[in-house]
Length: 234
Image 1: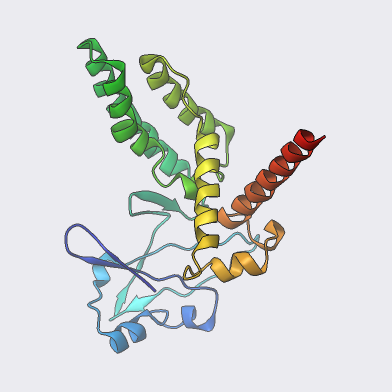
Image 2 (image 1 turned 90 degrees about the vertical axis):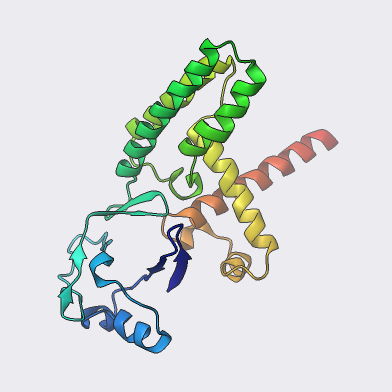
């Protein structure tokens, strides 16, 4: 159970349940947990998002909290990121593309006013880039279709033509941020994933996710560094 405070002084409780007996019980154990820890649960805002990659999906009983059946949704917006039951990030990519298009309008308007390139680059990194690459660590390596990747790269090339520079692609930015995040986790002994990463650094032990991709990038960077040192010595 994760507590996240929102800007409107409400608190979002993110509950991740596995396929256990607790999920089949009314409320999936959430109601019992709230009764013990005393948070106020808003049943009308509670949604259920089921992610199941098995070929034969199990039929789950509807979750009921306080005699109210929880709605099952195909997608949900959480902290600005659109999650769907397939985790293919298509809906999230569509939203990023729309927001990026609208923010590019202001960048072009600034150029029409003969604003210097330094200020244009500052505007891009603070306003446009922050929209395009928001939470790229989560979805950057998991775009299912080449069309989604090409759409975002096309969106990036447009401000590049305005600024007169070549900007990094989606893959380059996401890989750099994933590697930086992985190194910060490995350096922080208090992080929940620190023990998992230090005890086992094999990407094949994890379902395709941030961990598997970050470990692959980490090993690739170590190989490149060792190859560079060997060539330098020789």
